[in-house]
Image 1 (cartoon, rainbow, N blue to C red):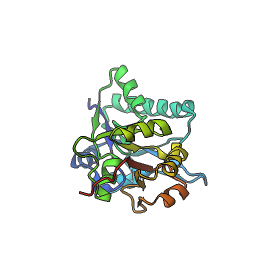
Image 2: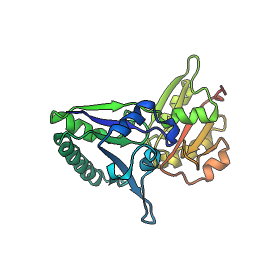
Image 3: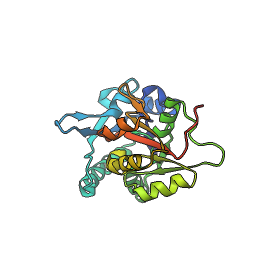
Image 4: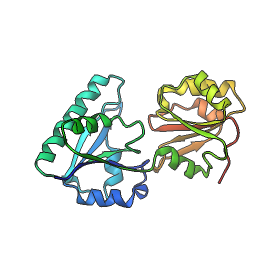
Length: 237
C-alpha cells in the first residue's frame, strides 16, 4: 500500500509548487485540505486555491481547522483527520494531506503524522518553499550572509529574546506574527536602528511588504504575516 504523503504547498503562489508536488496531486485519490472560518463566518481554504489547477473537487476532503489556542478543539480535528487517513490507507487509496508552507516548519499537522506512524501506517514528507524564503526572494534580500546566523521564532517571541538575538549577529524571522505583534511593535518603537521587513500573505495576489516603521506599528497584523528582523540593513541581492 502507498504511504500517506504530507505535501508542502509553499507560501501560496501555485507557481511555487514543486514539480513533485504537482505529480503527487495528479496521482492522488484523496487530497485532504485545511480550511479556516473568518470572523464573518465564511469558510475559506487557501490550500484549495493553490492546488485547484491540479486537483478536481471530487477528490478533495476539506477539514475546518479552528484558529484557536484551545488545543483540545484542534486535537479533535486532527483525530478526525487521522481516522480518515487510516481508513483510506487500509482501502488502498493514495492519500495526500496538503500543508500550507512547509510541513517541517511549525506545522501542527505532525500530530497526525506521528499518530499514523505509531500505528504502523507509513508516511512521507514532501518538501516545499517556506514563506520566509519566498518573502526574502520577493523583497530581493540576501537573507543571511558571511557570519550571520538565522533564527526562526514562532508567535511567542518576547522582547528580551529578540534583543539578545539581534545583538549577537542573528537575523530573526518571526512567524505567526499576529500572536506577538505588540512585542514586535514595542521593539521597533524602542530600537530605531533595527531593520524590519514586514510581510503579509506572501505568494498571494494581495501580498504586502514594507520596511516603514510607522506603517508596521499602525497595522493590525493578520494570521498570515511574518517579519524579518536584523540589527543592520539586510543586503539586497
